[in-house]
Image (cartoon, rainbow over all chains, first blue to last red):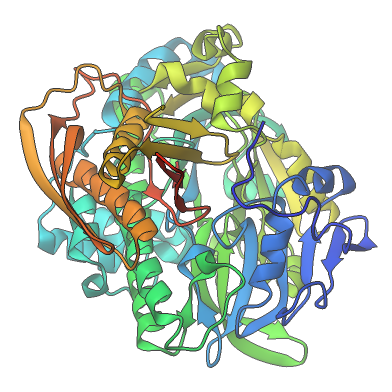
Length: 492
Length: 138
């Protein structure tokens, strides 16, 4: 049974929800004092009743009070309660009078997802899967207290923070053609290594090329079903049974420290900038202020660390592939890499105007459609891929964003399946069940740093991501392309 | 009086720490944090550090203290086994801690904690006990 950490009336926000259509629910801007724009929740009725059980909707309304917010305070179908901003929240602010909020990005800056596609089938890999899983578990460090395999100097770290994935490729840890298949080509412009504290740098020095823990993972998958063969083919997903690899990881301790550092800066600056907030965790500073510029520069540096991290992990996956599969199969190609915790400076059409905005996406993914100039050339005919990881027992989805999402959500889409049970509840529910054994019986190999705690990350702990996809597609924000199922899972 | 326990939170984990003194609360919070990350059995006490933390107020100090321990885990692989607060004011804390370097070969590792957060943070006092509540981002 969950304990409310703040005494709030039940169902607040929910009685004021105005259905606009089966997938859109408005929180009117007079719902609570200080709201500058309405809230807009994308969900179907079933998801909405889940959403109403925590305080996520109140948080959507709180975000609507932030200075400079444009359009609406947006909630994706996978929304749930977070720090200040809900997870699955999107908010875009004007640059001149708007604010930036580290809580609107999250502690794990550029937590994101990367998909690789191999040229062999499940049948072909099956005899080697155990060996591959063992090798991946060994070669990609994960879990508490593990150190990365790279030894960086401070000067190396400066380069990583400035150049992101390109640093890795230049070091031979990737292919030059990988860079075009990463959001922002694997490096956010304006990154300032100097804006990253010494503490954050120290944390990052030995963590490049590590997976992390909790809901981070590395998963070997098979394509289960292709819904849109033409788009899937453009992405390199050619047939059911094709093997893919999904990586879910972020900026590790470096990013967490940057967030914590700037939450303190923002908290102290609130009075100076005369910002009144309904929730202290929305701590923010004006984008135009030195602190705002500094946060964006540090955030970009941390984001680049995460892009480099996923690039290094990719390289080690390819080396493991080579070691285990040899000449049987070429190492996998990069399909795409997307962030789901980020604030980005983007141009969007709002009403009749073209505006440069700071778009906060926390637990939400950029999904730019066909024709958008920021979509890499090979994908510009269809839009870039969006990945929605589910859980280790079920499936993940590949989607593509639409022009409707561009119009309504600043080109934003959901990011995955949210949790439906606390860790404690999941452990109690699954007491006596060996999750790794249960998954092995279903043909899914698991290698975990903490086998006894797998219950916390089991399917029973998560919503069904298919429900999120159904609502997102139903709202017209995305179009499903393919479904992927796990065959081997590596977890910290 | 239970020195620490966890409480339910969908996405993350809540920690309650108690003590008869404020110093005890801070040390029990550290013990609770460690317990979430690694089985304390088998943690030696051969690394000794002095740890300080600063914040705008006492409740914030709890967050800063736990985040400082998370920093030490990343920076040095250090987890405390024993803790003694030597100085505690409203906005700063100094503690002597002894503990171990995490080694997955020797220790039963559990979960990584990303950060202690300010959400739902409280530090309250009843007649005989202090109680702190903090939500940790997993």
